[in-house]
Image (cartoon, rainbow, N blue to C red; front, side, top):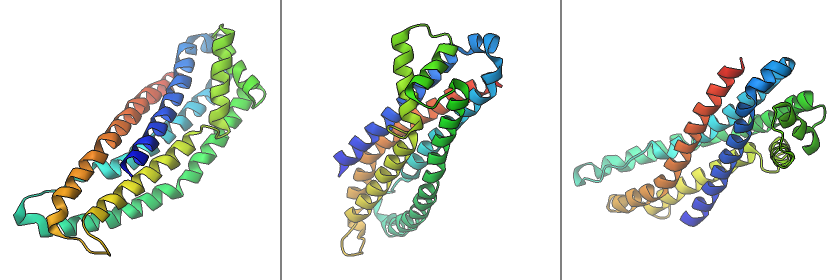
Length: 229
């Protein structure tokens, strides 16, 4: 189960890298765009803002797991079972809340497609390629590559919405596994807390890396949004 979650988090991080690649392209051509095509500035800024919202979702989902820690001393173990149970119930509510917003992220992908269509004239890989041509990236190979990436993003082939859904799957799986390590058949036993704490730490490393990666990308995208205003 840990391997499944680890593999899932790798896909999420790949999704974050895909966003950063697109943002890099926008950043590198920002001055050229402002000088030669100021009419598309607002659409491009809104496009990047949708990417930022998606990254915030991934960061928030990861934080659900990384924000909990067990205390393993003997004198508080009974309280720790109650505290984890309450947190688990709360986290399930948070996971449901996040799941409800995945459709919003898919809507964001549609908005990205709409913005891209307005900028490039057509919402296809060829059309998206035109965006990067406008940004002054005069390498046909680079433009083709970035155009295809944005096409995949907008059409959910490798969309951030899918990365968010995968992030949520990883979160629910990890929390359930930690809960099960405390007992079986709906029971929890204080002597299992060290095992649960070790399992939480093992899962936590991957979630923390994903959270940090998303946070770094959020800051980068936010700066670009401000620059495009």
